[in-house]
Length: 276
View 1 (cartoon, rainbow, N blue to C red):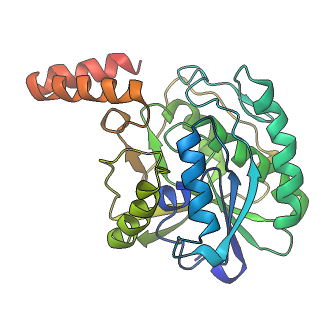
View 2 (spheres, one colour):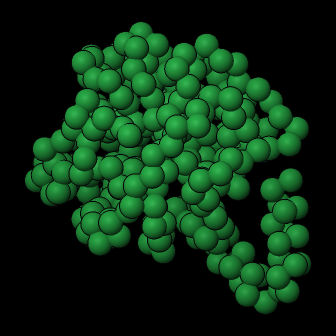
């Protein structure tokens, strides 16, 4: 079991804590949110209001690093992902510069803790800044001798990158039940302040699973695999049921319409081709 009395949760963005770590929020000692400002002014205003007025039920646990997002979401090649020291390969100098900023600010915040719970190496559904936060934790965990736990979320976008890390994950797994009412309460706070950045249709699973990375995982090499692998007890996210941008809203509606009108075997074949 995770020793929550000596554990800290590190997430990339406001609302990541309730999306991917909701089952442990009320047990954790401290929540560090790396990024705050983004390119969307309405989201920025909403985030400022939420934190300045301390609207979240776990407000006393939050530490904001206030690093500006690099605006790289969906700009990596997730079909042929290339892992880098600073995250995943993407053409952005701001993304690369942010890695040093994160390392510098996180290092002091993590001193004295035993466990860090953070984004997995493939960024859950496939977010470049989630991957970057993990890479920072990887570096700092070696320096401070920290144990690292990651959630079991993945999607049809991120499973190729997930395959690079099969050997990183130990057999140790903790499972926690999600309080859906609590999740909806927090979601409403973000939504009412125009700061909810995920799909309004998202439904949390019944349980979340957390995997402990192997000791000295930072020495292991990422291994390419021709056949992507998925281990048991994972939480799968169907990205075509989730929309977080205007373009993905259109994409989601088209795919859901095809799912409705096409025979099941034809639809599954199309989705398989899309992800091949």
